[in-house]
Length: 82
Image 1 (tube, helix red, strand yellow):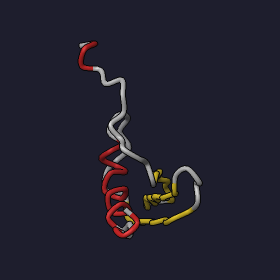
Image 2 (cartoon, helix red, strand yellow):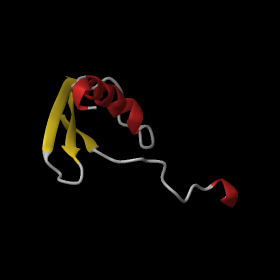
Image 3 (spheres, one colour):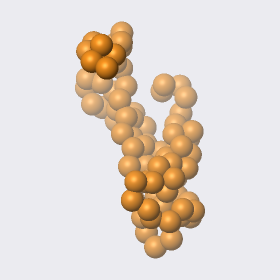
Image 4 (cartoon, helix red, strand yellow):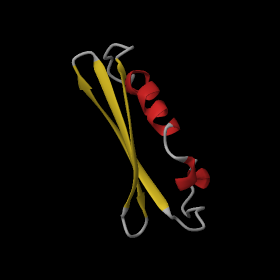
């Protein structure tokens, strides 16, 4: 298995980086994505999706609870910045 580990990156140059997170309020899930320029870390864009929680909390299954909102926030990113 050790031979399959990649120890070098395949990126030519990184221009943008992003982060995503979700939080909860009552029966809502609020997902946000922020895009920054790299290496200056200047703000480029932020998207937010607010939706109803559609999956119960089950440890180990967070992607089912947060995935839809994160995907919708990602889909709302301005494609010209990517």
